Structures are given as structure tokens and as C-alpha cells.
Length: 217
Image 1: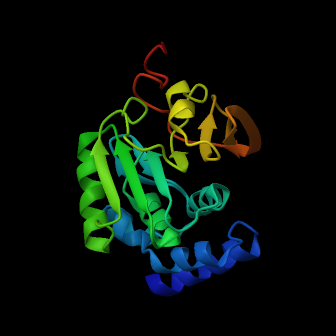
Image 2: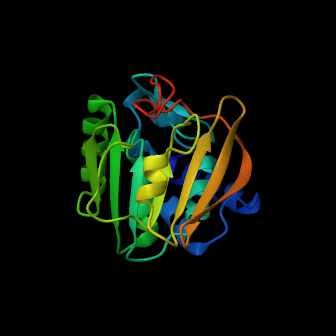
């Protein structure tokens, strides 16, 4: 089976399982080539529904988790989306594809992976819609509050700076805690914060000042 056929079959199975529910997410899943965002040694496994190593102790999430999170973000055209944990750039590419017109700012604390992701995104044609920054994403200060925030590593709890950064009426999708981690949808309305548990998950731990390797302020 070639990779294009494997991609189509994977998407069909995720639709049948109810993971992919919207046409926009389905179309992005069919269009963005996961094999272009993994090391050469992992390309043959690109459409296995499992995480794959991308080096430096990090992984590209399993496809079902990428598209579950995309659905939970409830993406619309013209939004500004802020991602913490670029990894290979694949998740950012799917978000850009779903929105069509919109902007993605994504941060990666491992400089080498930020470079890897930028090259992947550039080759795939998303460099005009996705900006990659090598830094501790929780600490970065943006000039504009994002409509959506996606965190692709598990934090001890929802970082306060991200709650402050999120636009009123916005949503954040984030895994928190230790195994089994909890995937949460966090909504901010009128200054009030609501958290909704979705499912148990397994992500690499968040690094940096608000991660597990540092004490929070």
C-alpha cells in the first residue's frame, strides 16, 4: 500500500470512530502529508495511528490525537492560534489548513526541532501562515491575544500566563497532570474560566519555567 492510500484509509477509520467529525478537519487530514513531518527512518510508519519519535526525546502525536485536538479547538477562518510545542510542525500545518485564512504562531523549546519544523513547514507550503519561534512558549509575550491556544505537552496544571494571554471568548486545549494525564478544554468568558475534561492521554512533559523541570512562580 502506498502512502497516499494509507493516508486515505487512516482518515476513513478516524471518521468511522467519530474522532474526525467536520469536513474541514477531514480535508486537512487528507491534504497534509504526515510523512513530510517525520524523520526519513519513520516515513513508512507515517499512517500508523501511533506517536513517532522525532528525536531529542520528543514525538509527533498519534493522528487520532492531532485531529481530536483540532476538533476541540473549533477553528474558524481568520483566527490567531498559538501553539506551545511545535515538534515536527505537523500539528501546526493541520491547523493552518483547517483555517485556510488565519495565522499560527508556534513555539518550540528545543532549538534543533524548531529548525526541523520550519524546514518541514516551508517545504509543505505553510511558511506564509505559520511562524515558528524557538523559545519557552509559556513565557513569550505576544502583541495580540490569540483566539485559540494549543499545548502539545503535559503541564503540571494550566499555566496562569496562558490563561491571561487567551482572548476573552477563546479556547485552550491542554493536557495536564501526570499519567494518566487529563486532556482539558479551557474556555474564557467574561473573565471567568471554565475547564472541561475530555479524556485521559499520554504526552511528553512540558519543559521550561511552567513545566515539570522547573518550579512555578
